[in-house]
Image 1 (cartoon, rainbow, N blue to C red):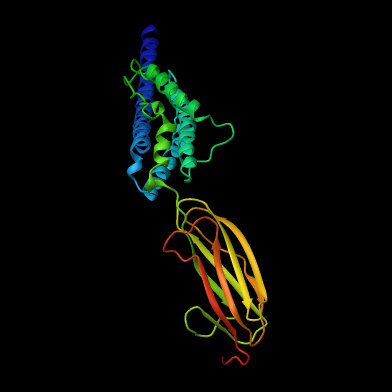
Image 2: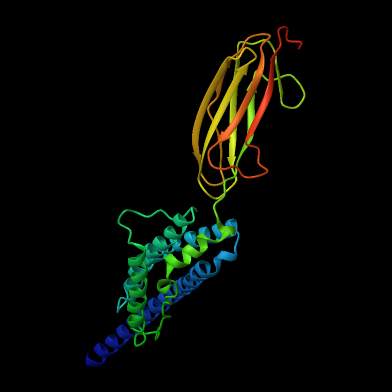
Length: 308
């Protein structure tokens, strides 16, 4: 009986070691990939902050967006690592550290984005300050460095990579100030009139001439486009001036999100058969970008007979 009991104990121990070996190696594979990604991210972020002034604004915006998306994906990986719990529970340690570091990196990315007027991660009111986030990155890197060997004596002899801390040691306000002063990274205005719709549809006529059939109203809708990676306010003015001096005017405002278009609400102007005058469409606001159409003025003629 003693021999049978001993064999069962030995077999049970081998099965337990085999299970632990499988779990440890599986965790090692996932953790190794995540740690490699985090260290690569750390290097890329530091490089972008210290040398990004040579990039164009679109190039910088793309790299910042890619970093924002990458760090966001780590939360899912961290959640998957929570089970099964290892002994010692190094997976829980890495999972919790990763979640903290995601918040810290989000804070850094948001600071850069806000300073340069670019799109970045959304942070809550409880998010750490920039200084606190960098201290936290240093603290989690140091803590992980002291614990990453805990599975070296367990089945599988797992020793995981350390976390680098390049971006946590940067003088981010100074680096971002340098970026903000780079002319090629400066936020520039680029709002353009992309379409004007007139109802009833004008007859064929020379450029910048509106020839309408007899009507009592002219319905106008204007679409504009934001050609830059920055939110831009725009004010649209529509002015109809008849030959008699009567003026009808409407002004509408809207803030366009980066790289988007927007159609303002239609507006109806009162006209009458035989009327002549001018109709102007103007975008107002920040200084205009050269080469982009920000105003159009048309000669307006409403036919008394519909034949011109």
